[in-house]
Image 1 (cartoon, rainbow, N blue to C red):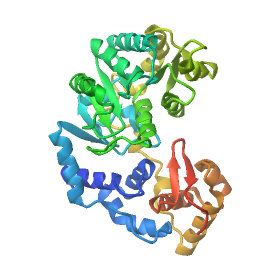
Image 2 (image 1 turned 135 degrees about the vertical axis):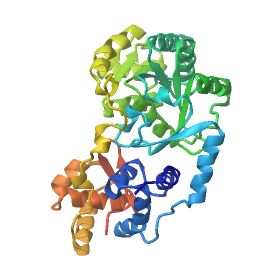
Image 3 (image 1 turned 30 degrees about the horizontal axis):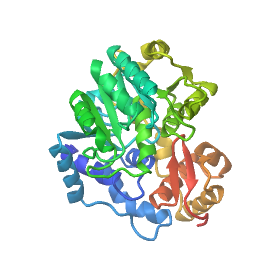
Image 4 (image 1 turned 30 degrees about the vertical axis):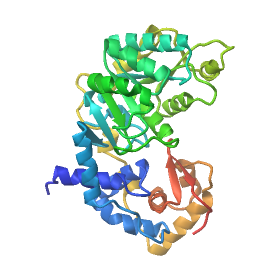
Length: 386
């Protein structure tokens, strides 16, 4: 049966915006049920199976349609996970965003990219290094990705625009400028690159949005270059997420007397690649780019193979009696705690099959009792129990 593209877009957006459906659950729901419409129909039953007393709040079609129309009115477009126009490197993340809004040239999000990030309270030298390095990377044909924050991010975007394209990943909505001083820069990026947002239009950025934004920066990029980062800098979160995503991490060395460089210098101690110039980054990436099947000339168009051919055995509904599923849920909850647990460990310690454990975890996430985390890990929300 032919699926109406507009209807499917509405259903996918409703699923992505449903309370309790995170990025990991979204992907698994589509794998199990085959379509967003079928997944939406199954949500109330999954929530009950996970122990939730009330059904999840699913946005009505009219709400999703309003968001779609608002995005279009802004001149932007929505890209959905597992569609051919979705950024292929970003799709490889365990917790890839189900949908992103892109204002500007969407092809920039699928191009070979390097992130340049760092301190908001950056030194003049740090900003000069970031701007110069980004300009040279862009001149070499790479798209420069950053977070449109003041300091290093703004310098990197500005430098890239001198010679090529840049992508700004924002924490709020695609139409929200933060900080306000970057309004003109954001407009230039939309004209000479792309602005990307996971949050709906009109969303004001909050503290919890920035780590989510950081994973998109890391996910779009072949590697992340850190220029000036204090020990508690958000740039170090981006670097950690890059490591988890199997991306390269580079760091520009800084003065040991400058607290803004302690985090980035720490990355070098931990094994980050020394990047004194753009040439250091390009030389390190050159071999990886040439070997990457994602960028081969004859690479197939469309989503990565893993999305087209998922491990169906663990995503299908297990053939178990209700009392067996209840017992499996009880055992899984008993093994979980607030600290992240690897799903592989959970399966090994549980007497039930991998399919049963994965089914229970999906039910529990929809019910709001567990949180799926990057790196194929889960954590309990609240106290254990049936």
